[in-house]
Image (cartoon, rainbow, N blue to C red; front, side, top):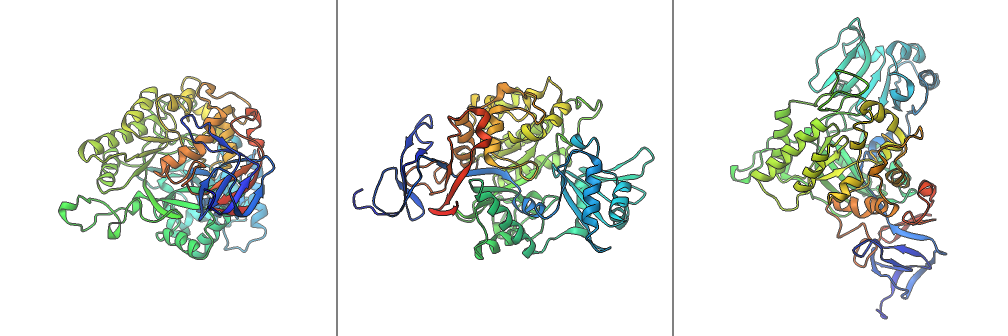
Amino acid sequence: MSALRADLLLTNARVRTLGGPDHELVASSVAILGGRVVALDDVPAHRVLDLDGAVVVPGFHDAHNHMAWYGLSLTEVDLRLARLEAVYDAVAERAAGLGPDEWVVGAGYDENKLGGHPDRDALDRAAGGRRVWLKHTSGHMCVVSSAVLADLGLAEHPVEVDGGRVVTDAAGRPTGLLQEQAQALLSDLVLPYPLATLVDAIERAGRAYLGQGLTSVVEAGVGGGWIGKSPVEVAAYQQAREEGRLPVRVELMVAADVLHPVAAHASDGLPLGIDLGIRTGLGDDRLRLGPVKVFSDGSLIGHTCALTDDFADTPGARGYLQGDAGALRSRIVDAHRGGWRVAAHAIGDAAIDLVLDAYEEAQRRWPRPDVRHRVEHFGVARPDQVARAADLGVVPVPQGRFIGEIGEGMLRALGPERAGWAYRGRSLLDAGIIVPGSSDRPVVDGRPLLGMHDLVNRTTEGGRPFAQEEALTGLEALVAWTTGSAYASHQERERGAVLPGRLADLAVLSEDPATVDPARIKEIEVLRTVLGGELVHG
């Protein structure tokens, strides 16, 4: 080791390596060479950075976010407001600076906080008749103005949409609210985004991420469906990388709508795929293809997720699946057979049943070792579903941050009897499941330290406890946002710990999430971020 000369030595630090059987291994220095950690000792280095006692942890990894969507939202009207009138005022303010044919686009409204969804007629008045498109914070619905409805031929009469709804008032007149797959009706009007616009959004989001200690993320759906921004969306990420404008490591989920029958040989067992047989794993440590993304249901706070029992605040309503159950199950099984990892969005327990059934069938008919299919959100999971996910080796991907920002709406939707099933933590660990950290940004504020705070404290925005028996410790929350998320991406040998041989992706913090007062985790500052051995923030 004496002959080693590192590129960079971080010294006089408290290094939370997350090594050892209990993730308790600590060190005081990190030596970096060629973009990887080479030692946890003071060794000769071309550059030495004294951290004056700051805490070093692995760079944070968000296992489920929407990077391009978030970057686009930063230029849209911010609708995270508390009153409907404030929404209309914000629309009017933006409209005042636009031409008559320009759109007012806003994002982030939550009817649980506003007291209801915005209404087309009020939007018409606020925007002076312009086209208005307001996106719900969940992404699973939106509201549009009368001018947009007229463009769609829906000004006075709805249409039936498989897996979605054009919501109407008591007289049968569309209100402007489009749920789930009904949002796809807008596609011809607003999609695709130009690649240049998407590259700008990707860079804008990534720069924000570096300042929050994020070094890698999973983009949860590109290329198709209501979640995609362009059928050539992967090209935007490739272009961003080529131009030096992809600030963080990215794994891309491919929307299931992109899969189609491929003309492979019958013996290949590829019933569905994308051209050239491309599938999960193509790429490198900076940009790679991850799972195929399948939507089975919708939103909990939006009351469109598929439950086995009624919503507590809406008797008679149980949500719905985003397609025929048999077709959804076949798509999951066929994607597995074709070599894809599958990441199925399932929030309601009825949807989780369908997804777990499909995963079990897929593995029984076409076994693959350590495949790690995922259930995105695993939102309302019964105890038997926790045990079953563990038995199947499935990775649930819950968002603890939901509790701190939209928890009041979730409590109303579920009632006290089922609150303990929502966005679990402790019971997953107790079942032997490795829990990843994720945000679903921009559905909520995606700062990792806020996410850790909510995994530990589990208190709603209104100050109410939310199933605190599911709380994690500070160390467990840190492990989730590093090692746990790396595991969910099959990357635990490359990232998620500060150990020799791992990628030198690091966050330098003012305090240690594992030992600080739990009430102060969200106050921890990100002082520096290191990606591949390069100081990229601070």
